[in-house]
Structure formats: C-alpha cells, structure tokens
Image 1 (cartoon, one colour):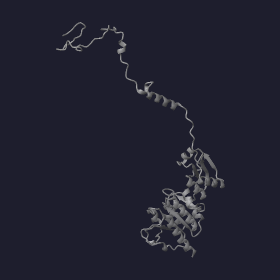
Image 2 (cartoon, rainbow, N blue to C red):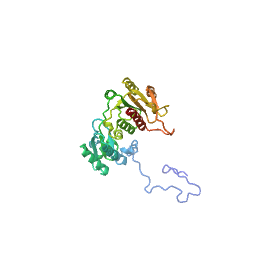
Image 3 (tube, one colour):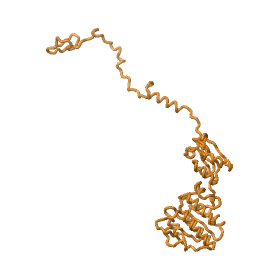
Image 4 (cartoon, rainbow, N blue to C red):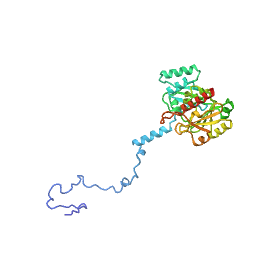
Length: 327
C-alpha cells in the first residue's frame, strides 16, 4: 500500500500490517517546517583537517611551541678547551701521567680536573710537579675530557722533542763513527729502547724516517730511561738518500736481517765507520734499504723458530761492535 499523505511510501508486508513495529514510528512532534535555506552555511565544507601540530590544543602543537622557544632562548657560552701551546703531546690517565713524571719526561704543565677523586697516583703526580716547579692548571672535568677523551681527570702536557739532523750527527760524530738507522720501527717502546742501547754503547746518533715509523713520544722517552736527552735523534724524509749521505761521509752500511746467511761474527770492522740498519718489527728491511746495504748479517740462534725483538737485536749488534773496538 502506498500512502501519499506526506509524500512517502509505506510498504505493508502481508500478515504484518497489524503488528506493532511493522511501520516506522514518526516523531511525536510531527513533521517540522524547513529552514528555507537559512542554515545553508552549515552545509558548506570547512576545508581539510589541519595537521596535529597546527591545532592549538594538540600535544604535537605544544611540543612544536616548546622546541621553537628552546631554539630562540640564548645559550650559555661554551667553555673552550685550551690546548697547551707548542704542539706537544698530551699524556692522559693516572698511571701514564705519574710514570711520565717519574721518568722525568720534559713537560710544560700538569692539568687536573676540579673535584677530582684523589688517590695515591694523583697525590704523587702533584708532589712530583711541585718538586720540579711544573705549572699546575686546574680546569673543569669537561675540558679534560674534551682535550683527550679521558675521564680520569688528569693530563700531562709534554714538550715537543727536539730532533737533530743527519748533517749535525755526521759533523759531531767521532771517528770511527757508529750510527744506528731504523727502517720502519713502529713501536715507540722499541724506539726508546734502541736509543737507550745506542747511548750505552757509544753510538753517535739514531736516524729514522718521518713517515710510517714511531716518533719520540712520551712512551719512547720513558723507554729510553732518559737517554733521549743525551742521544741525537734525526728524522729524515728519505732513508735511502740518508744512507747515501752516510756512505759519502765514510760509513760502511750493515743491515740486520734474520734470514741473512752471513753471521754477525763476520762483521769485523772495529776501525771503520759503521751505520747499522734495523728493519721493522714485522717486515724487516725494505727492498730499497736492503739494496743500499754493503753487508747484511744475521744473529745466530739455537732455535730456528725464534725471532728477536728489534731493540734486542740492535743491542746485540751494538755490543758486538763495542767489543771489537775495545780490543
């Protein structure tokens, strides 16, 4: 059945016309009159939904506002870590600092963090610095960490090592000369031990390459046991060229190599000027340096599988030369 009373259709299903709920109930108030277009604006779109950070009461908007306020807020001036002048080395750590002070490594100042936890090593470091009139500078802990990355709160600024030149060594050397040259020794402790042996057996100087080799750091100075203050050490840019200069000055060049056929006992040159060349810890003598040698010798050992440390081999060779010259 279609009812046109209100302009709508009412469908009665067979058998359900008298049942309650078969027809949708209308509002009690009845139909309401239209607005006549007065509420048309309510139906117009309001555009896309704003982003969360653009809604004033949204959490994202509050975070954005806080971040903007933080960026515009003036920052406190950052403390600049003042590195010691002169380009020297910084020794970091409580053990390293106290050992360097005990060894008498030339230093420019002791840097200590404020409110540091004092132990026996800190106490001894301060006492050694005061005894030698070494300046002590107290700084913020963050400055110590910024300079070295160490969190132990103490640094020792070392003076740059004063290298000699090969020319100075050749001029000051006594006849017959004895010079030690290092071909790629990279361990500073080996370097320091070689300098110590060179001083003990009367060598005139130590020559080493500038690149891909150890330098006279605080570790090398400690290993030399103070001999670095007495023994001239020269850095050269080209070791083969330095060997040629030593030959022109009258030196017979001898290389140390574990695989050489000639034993050390064949080195009977007590009255001649000698340059002894020691190879690196792993590779030994380089090809160019080996070709420059007048003689390559080895140190005989009972066990074929054993090898000698570079500093130990140098000490044995220097002892042999010194024994020959004493006769």
